[in-house]
Image 1 (cartoon, rainbow, N blue to C red):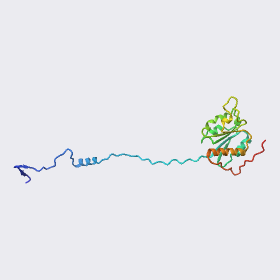
Image 2: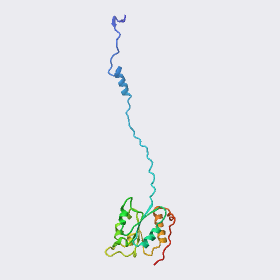
Image 3: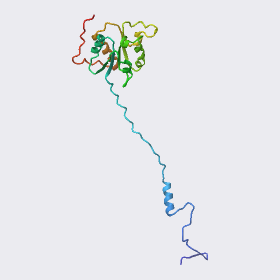
Image 4: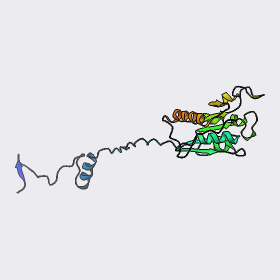
Length: 205
């Protein structure tokens, strides 16, 4: 018999476990256990550090020659005939301002004579001043470096140029000057002359 007698009374064995508020069975128990072990998920974004960009090598040393007199223009051309230099020589009807402002940017050096393009009052010199702030150097070839034009007291050629020269100009002296400017700007000696180039001067007249 399943009944036990204690003190004259019988007590039945419970057929099921007592219910408890915190007790769960079956699917509820599995869900409860899964929730109890769920950890908060944190998403950590890790960025792989990018190497710094490699320094870009400077382009060729670019020169624009805007000199009125063919004799002096030719001397500037011979003086700038060095390996790797990119030289543009203009005639009087061409526009040096357009050469300065077009891409990829201003040239490294502008060689400009005071009479180029029949300019008055050094108008071209004044028009290209903004590009000096961007690194362009100006070498002026004028008859008088100290005297400003009438009506423009602040436009003395010596103030409008990085280097102002008065005649005579020899190709050898110009090449020495341009090589010095190159060294100051690029931090290394100027390249050698192109093969076949010469600085032999014609007789001064």
